[in-house]
Image (cartoon, rainbow, N blue to C red; front, side, top):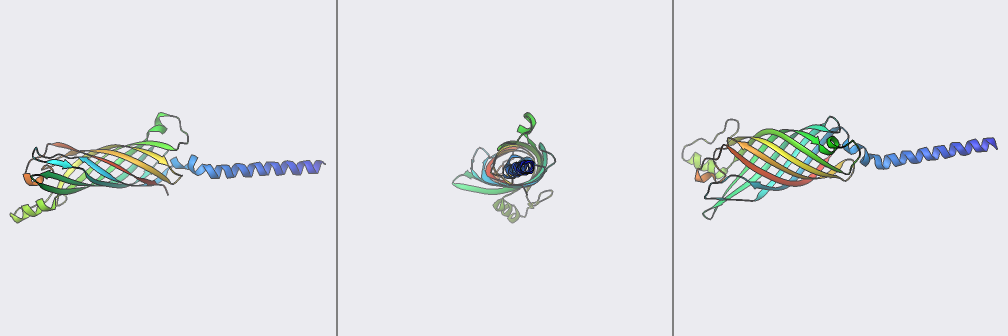
Length: 223
């Protein structure tokens, strides 16, 4: 009888331990590892707002995409490299002045909920990111116009209007599982030293500080 009791106790203990391990495995990937340290990849697409034009032109809404790679050193803080591409269309006198920009930024990322509240698992995250970088603004028709007149369309680093920028944004996330999250990213770029307004053919000098806003949706991947 004593041997049977011992066998039953061992069986019950083993069954409970196995069930607990399965439970941890089934929910642990979502409830624990989504805020693990390590690498992550972002890919987002949406629209671009704002962009300075002269008084003779209106700015139209156009597409915006961005992607990045980063590393979380702990559950709160990360560093990230980011690339953005914006399209611009300034409308005036029944014409549309098309241009685009490509920008590279280095950013710091903070998981606000993990900083403001105690550490715990959540299906939702709210990330604040900020950094600085360089934007190359390209207008092919304006470049051709300058070069046809014997001018030189060159920037300090690229054959474009080279603009410094500061980017600040916020990214709500919903975690589908431990590896994939859905993003809504809102980022504002404060730009410095833009030469002409986005209706470049009107040859109007831009203000010393200009701005662009992008709103995009996409995914974050964690290897």
